[in-house]
Every structure is written in C-alpha cells, then in structure tokens.
Figure 1 (cartoon, rainbow, N blue to C red):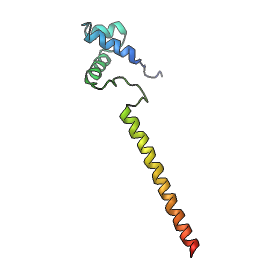
Figure 2 (figure 1 turned 120 degrees about the horizontal axis):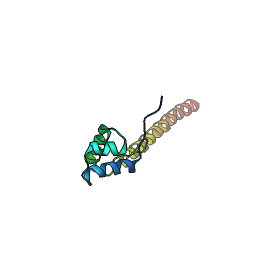
Figure 3 (figure 1 turned 120 degrees about the vertical axis):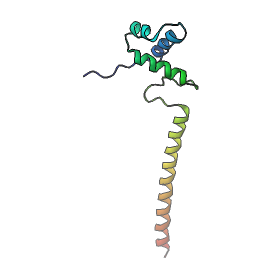
Figure 4 (figure 1 turned 45 degrees about the vertical axis):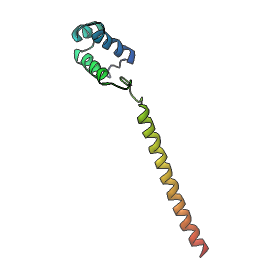
Length: 98
C-alpha cells in the first residue's frame, strides 16, 4: 500500500495562487494539478486562516512559539531532576553528619 502523497509548500502556495490571484475555480486547479478538489479547498482555507505566515509548515516544523514551549518544557524537566538529586543528596549528607 502506498503512503499519502506529500506536496511541497511551494506547490501548495502555487495552487492557492491559481485560485485566489488568477481567478481559476478550485475544480479547474484540481484538474490541472491532478489533486482532489477537497485538497485544494483545504489549502485555500488554511492559507486564508493563516495570519502569521506559518501556513503549510509541514511535518515536524514548529512555529517559533511551539519551539519555545518545547525548549521550556525540557528545561523544567531538567530542573525538576536537579531538584530531586539535590534533595536526595541533602538527605544523604544529613544522615552522614549524625
């Protein structure tokens, strides 16, 4: 079984441009590019809803906000581990002092 087709950001932007800028219908563009009309509609909708320039990011490409969240979560995890280690060390040394 073949996997899903993947289209580049440029391909999607060109398809959207054919609809929005050049006045072709979604069905015409779908026929020209050999993709379904629903896909063209989804791309147009995603492009129109995009207000921060991140339409068609692709798999694994994070927005700057998502990358910052991922980085901060990793820092929190590291700090929690450091805190746990320091607690265990203080308990160990407190027992040694007695």
